Amino acid sequence: MTTAPASPFPWPEEKIAHYTAFRAREPLTIDGKLDEASWRLAPRSPRFVDLITGRPTIHDTRAAVLWDDTYLYVGYWVEEPFVEARLTEQDSLIWSENDVELFIAGKDAYYEFEINALGTIYEAFFLFEDAYERGGFSADPQFSRNAPGFKPWNGVGFTTHPRGPRLGFFNWDLPGIRSAVSVDGTINDSSDRDRGWTVELALPWSGMGWLAKGDGRALPPKHGDTWRMDFSRFNTYKEAKPAEDSGGWAWNAHGIWDSHIPELFPYIHFSDAVVGTEG
Image (tube, rainbow, N blue to C red):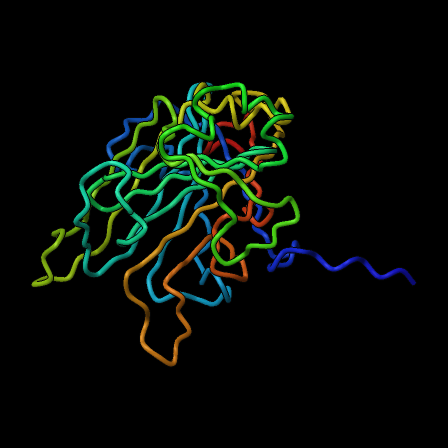
């Protein structure tokens, strides 16, 4: 009997989520409210779990994905009794506050997006060093090792990735991205109890050329195409003991304190069916 080789990654393949993204019924108004028919009909993720253990979390967080020929749309529903955010400058260290995050992976690179409850965003682009020359990245000035915001990157908690180190470009912005937040409560006011906040994103396929370059994937996707994306939430607080709350929650766990593992991102399967008609 042959034993399958052990995975080099800290979370098992069979526990990685799968999701079908349907087409939006109409172009979406990016206002953060998630109140269009398409969002009401879109299947939502399960409640986010702890990033490390996969255990239940104290507040509800869910995400959904839609698309059309122009945009990838992502929505987040974030339960939050005390909505707080202070950072207002783009590319501030948004992860140091309560935020939600999105990662989109290509074959050789991935994109990171973060947003807080004020709508302040942070973006970065990472590529595996083994593809830097082969994939043509080195020929583009925006990916020069002398570019502003460049630094070598080897993950956070998982520093033994089989492909080796990455190159991080922390001044990179996805062209044409649109984002909005809607707060259900009073931000930065602890005298009352809030209900939470919602996030709405529209990411143009036209800005994802460098993500698609490694395997020549279609932009926009074709029916049946599969991408890998990660959806997470990070908090400045943790649930009281005896809960084992790492402070980071995600659609599926990673088994370690690190979002930068594309092989553990949920599988997003694109369908040509219009949301609400797929049955």
